[in-house]
Length: 331
Image (cartoon, rainbow, N blue to C red; front, side):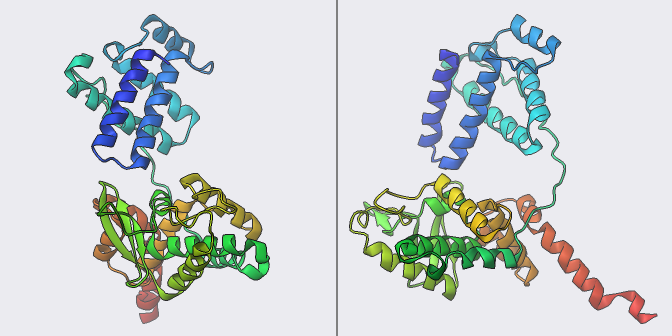
């Protein structure tokens, strides 16, 4: 990787942190830039010969060298070799990176090479929600009777996490970011309020929001917290979710791996944690929850995201309405 472009990326990382961008946003943005710079320095063997020759003729080692052709070649290659959503993420990340570089006068990029570009078109894809029966099977694998006494801590923890996902619709990064104390140095932090049965989470934009959870989730959390309090090696860690045997806190990636293991044990297809967020939104609308309430609880700013999450529920509601009001029954 070019040392100059690496330096630009490192400076941007500092800027993102200073402007309270979420860890997930930073990770996504930097992944896009890293992918792009690697592409510039080592064009893939699968790249079209004419495009490869063009990149060789116009190398880009610093910001001033980057032109629209570099970005267009990269996005086209990503579209050919990855999912459409990946290409869109890469496009958005680069767009923000160039916007930042044009604002830093000493870098020397006066105009973004993407100024006249449009993002790749992503065809609408049906949102995969998880069947309720599959979620019940997941929870069944968390029954201590099916895990043994030595695995009770892990079983209780996993059940609490799965139930909290399904009851609040929080993102995986939000789940991993939950802490035990409600505040640190007098500053509020993401945590669980057992008395009011609410999860206080840090949403996009670094703002706190509270999402309620139900009695069964509260019971699962209480059982886990009692066992956590007995973990003498880790009990003083601020993180809510702990690994077993004194290994520290459960990370963003660890939560995904945990759910995959539970899916294997339940003999169901692998479930991505974000599918549980889709499923929560789907069930909320299907059971009569309003769009306004869903938007506030889910922490969405745009109506576009609300429509995307509620689309599958809208189809089912329309079918049920047809069965109630079908004109054919009047004839």
